[in-house]
Image (cartoon, rainbow, N blue to C red; front, side):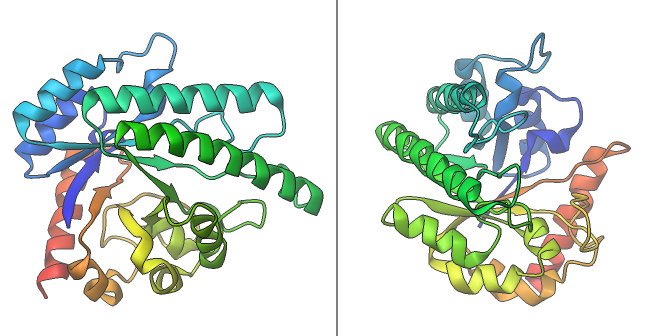
Length: 265
């Protein structure tokens, strides 16, 4: 398993600075936050060539979290859906220029739990995913779908729904298993058992089973020891997605130390 950090876990650092910090902390990966590409007057905006150059020099691989803020990959509102599509396609092309080989996709959510609306949102999401897969394949990028909320309004809130989506695209799609989200849903083992052969990417963080706190691994109630066998045998990529406002670098170190302890026991 190759272990890395999200740009969001490094506090105020730009992407190129986060790459250098990742190498300094002995990480092999950095996950780009795709929304940074579209913020107005963003201090984090850098060129794909510069990001790719620094990553290559530092020997750090890159993944990208495709844009999701203020967007919905299955929105029934034309303007929102169009913007979501445009930003995801732009981010994929940017990622390819930077040398990214895997992109994390946020599934859609419906505004209300009403069956005709749920079905329509699902169909729109699948249409967008199909279009993105064509582009991603041409760019040699893997798309991995992340598990998100537990509510029925989320399209892949349960392992069987995720598997159905993967099978819809003949297993071209992969899974980005977010351990923190799965813990809140109390479905971590079920996600692993159902989707093990499709899981390509992990998001590792912790919480106390109620809200998405993104704490350092080992500082919440997520029983990582229970999943040691899976983690030790995992051959994909894993991102520490730790959100800290006080001491982000120290929390990253704590998270890595705790993960190493779990894997070593």
